[in-house]
Image 1 (cartoon, protein in one colour):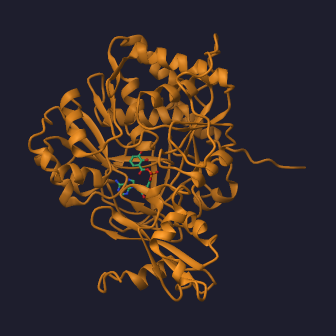
Image 2 (tube, rainbow, N blue to C red; image 1 turned 90 degrees about the vertical axis):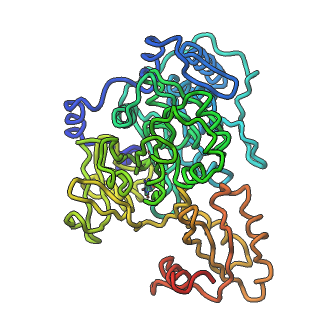
Image 3 (cartoon, rainbow, N blue to C red; image 1 turned 180 degrees about the vertical axis):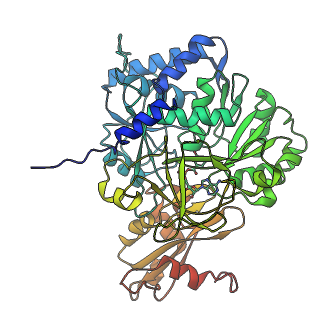
Length: 519
Ligand code: J2J
């Protein structure tokens, strides 16, 4: 007999019962939560995108029309649709339209290119790629405003809150990035609980400046929470200090989410002095470690509260609380948002460690996945037998459970919040005949925390071809720009692991000892 492994690893039945009984999982799908808000606040402003301003009723109408266009294009319930749109009102219309159709958006970043898109399409078995991003050489279906006539009657999805709502691309802890399936009810809990901790209500004006397809912007607490609770989402594609300060002043923005380099850019900007930031209530910073010295500047220089957010698209999100002691707010990444989150800090053999001792963070809970999409092999490595996700992060917990991220056990580069899987970039370089071996590593960077660089061993006599500009050109259009190494170093050989593999740690140790600096 053939045993088939399901694409989505379900939560065990007793666990489902527990989360339902605890009331953390509701019966609403993501589009239902918006519909409740539309019914309650039809005339409130839902979205501001440049000169476009939509009330909740207008957003609902735009979603309805988009749903008709998508249905006319042939999108049916259960379809995976790779969605690659820049921040804006159309992003929201398309996302909710897909939810309403019972189709699954597969969220691509605007920066994604050939490799990531092919991976998303293949991994999700998507039949559509919906984008307005100009992509040289990548076949795509754009959703044109003047598309086919909307279908007259589009049936609503008849699925429930237990369905998979969408897929996101993980940063990857080993090898290539994986697809993350999130259900309506687990995700709704994630952003509604986040909304409580971040004090989101109908008076919230949220500036979505990080990519809206990122888990942080979407759900921590993100535009999904704001639009479920009657607030306003202001969208922008311009993160520059002047543009952001202007939007904050003009729309009386109360909440912004940023990665550390962006927060730093705003803090350091001379434009800050003249800006009217009095409406700002809270700045959320996450995605990468926020230096304490910078965290300490937020309250005095921006005049708002800081909440650190340590989250992951696989699930777990930690926040510092508004009422936490000062040293917790500026010096930790907060604690899990749910009482039902189970976290373990363990040693290399999965044995629990006492508070204060750094170790690998494992997590299980009501909004953390039990497995990647259609990836049984990887799941065996990324999850414990009893369902804990191996975050790949090394953390230290204090007695109160606040976590500080002190390191990483996973093969991932965190470039100021943007995640890079070295193996993906290495694979694209190894197709070049002139390259014998290559190792992509993160090197310390004052602004980004880490930047991407590569160590390359040339085939005899071919080193001359391997210049930084030539190699960067080779990668451009194949992967997101942020993954392209800033520098390529030619070396004679790469340190090995002793079992015939390149040792990334060895490369790091050999070339980046803080004492001898950069070569
Ligand atoms: C140190 N490292 C952090 C932090 C994430 C909210 C906020 C961020 C993400 C995110 C997210 C960190 N300090 N404050 O999904 O909902 C690193 C860890 C983590 C990985 C996850 C959200 N916040 N990190 O960044 O899926 O290494 O999610 O495991 O992109 O980012 O990356 P990602």
